[in-house]
Image 1: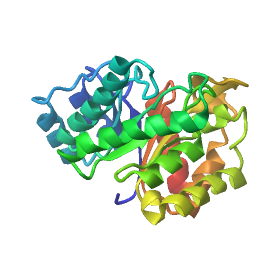
Image 2: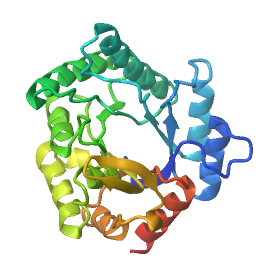
Image 3: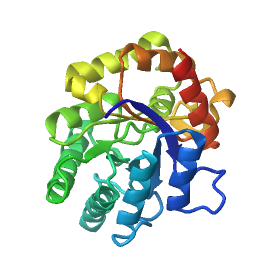
Image 4: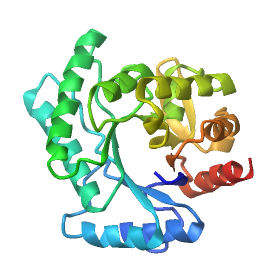
Amino acid sequence: MDKLRFGTAGIPLSTGKPSTENGINRVKELGLECMELEFVHSIHVTKEKAPLIADIAKKNNVVLTCHAPYFVNLNSSEPKKYHASISYIATSAKITSLCHGYSVCFHAGYYMKMEKEKVYAKIKEGVKEIVKIVKEVDDKIWIRPEVAGKVLQFGDIDEVLKLSSEIEQVLPCIDFAHLHARSNGKYNTLNEFREIFEKTEKNLGKKALENMHIHMSGIRYSEKGERNHLELKDSDMNYKDLIKIFKEFKIKGVVVSESPNIEKDALLMKRIYENK
């Protein structure tokens, strides 16, 4: 990636006639530089439409990422659900590739009261299968297990880093709000943020720091983890110190705002980053 880009999780709220195409144009008008295709409820971009979206993104110099559907569980004991989960994520990646997208993130699954080692092994096999399918059409798009926000979900920082170190074409999607919520309030100081990037570099090398996919928002949480997203100003998220660490480590990639007001917080973070 050429630099660190800030953008929105989905079509900006201020888009006149909401559509993917108009959303990309609006991202550019706002002075932002990336947009996440939200396939969370359905993969709503067709193969036929994808080249048009790719052209609009290229014209506007907007980098596209994607969030695969929520209803996946690579630890499902039901073969039908397990294979459907692989298909949803792989299809999301294929469509994003046709849009000339950079990265596809997903929530990998749930522990289902199983031993974590067994869950890890099963999810690893699922991710390997996804990469195998996607690699046939695109060997450059990043497949990204996301740091999950609830303690019942697979995806603490060590699990996603380990998957990324063991499978080619896989890097983490680090959601700092989820990291903060999952730990019931930790990972919110300058030193804790630094620790995450040091750990990422140690496990995955400089290439990971130059190809980040980050989610950011405020968040409400309990001892069970995430409850709901908030605007940054309405939360205890220490985003100003996190942005200092972005600069300290000279990271590149995308920072996607998942705030209830996506463009407002994306612009806030970009402004702080550029003024540091």
